[in-house]
Image 1 (cartoon, one colour):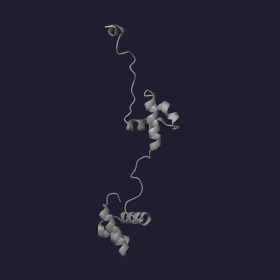
Image 2 (cartoon, one colour; image 1 turned 90 degrees about the vertical axis):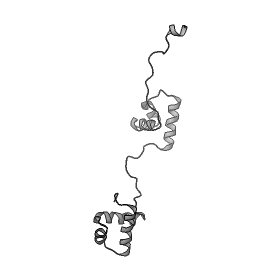
Image 3 (cartoon, rainbow, N blue to C red; image 1 turned 180 degrees about the vertical axis):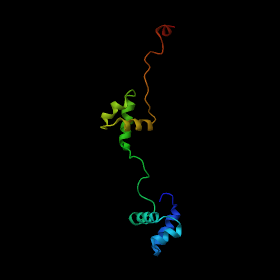
Length: 124
């Protein structure tokens, strides 16, 4: 059903509404019987030819409010880690937090272990 255009889906629905059989419609438009059946089922249940479901992928674990909270926590202490932020948000995995931080363009950094200016350079 994904490779059919909206126009083709509309033609299939039109043919079925006029009374053509599923087999006859499939041969008329050069598609499989299963494709015609799927288009008709989507039209019957949803009232439209395109599916009302998401296109795919995992649903986001965080809602917009959680993202704002996450950004606020990180902005207070920019040296915090995803593992420290995770319990505060009551999320059991660090990956969704890290993924959302990367989406917000916040990436992990290592602090410099030594001062940038030595004592001699500071005196000069």
